[in-house]
Length: 68
Image (tube, rainbow, N blue to C red; front, side, top):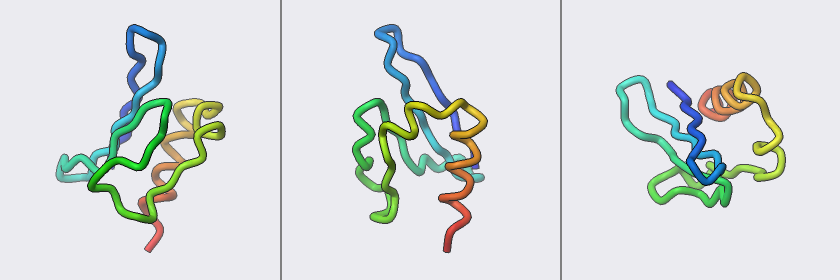
């Protein structure tokens, strides 16, 4: 699984998560709405994620993916 974090020109942060076979699992921005097609269990706490550094975010996403 890969997590990429992008900074838009307007300053918003966007993230994408792709599986090992490059299938997009989720994508989002500062609104952090659950993306269509994402699993129903895919929920995030916006304020916590905004405060995370990139390594913390990657570890957080890896933890979500590891859950059965």
